[in-house]
Image (cartoon, rainbow, N blue to C red; front, side):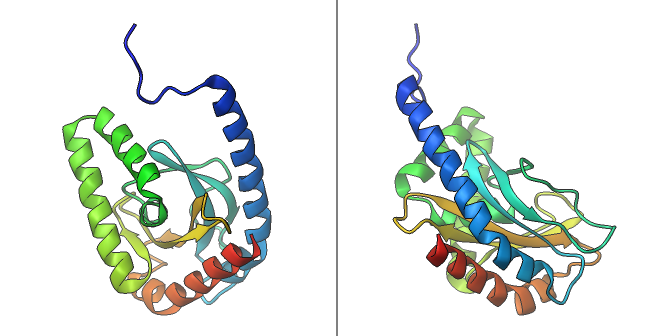
Length: 196
């Protein structure tokens, strides 16, 4: 039988998953007010979400939908690609080295091209986060979606989540995201991290 480097003790996995679910529920609840403030800001087309990593995806654990009928159709449980979405890139910048290495092992299991693209995406995300204080995706995840995101941390630093703001590219423009929402998003992430 071949060994699996991702295999763990089932009892440990069950306990860890239970704690993660409780933490996710708590941060989702605590984030609601900050998410509502972001959603109710100057652009009625933005959607706000907080998510956590699951292998090569980010899974939304809380959302605030746009105030408009024409909007992204997202909900709790929606999945976005870790290396192609703003929220995934933000989480990558906040991950511990160990967690990031695990994500790269998952990427490597998809093949050498995927791993190279994943590592390039991470390097670009780190540069952008250092320069601007957020990570972006302008049509990278989907050509019709713009978004920016920042990491959110649990108090002890054991969990990192992502908080994003985005929407349809024809209503949610790069300039407004970067000049109006970036500072609001960072303040919201800091408030959620402190409250958590």
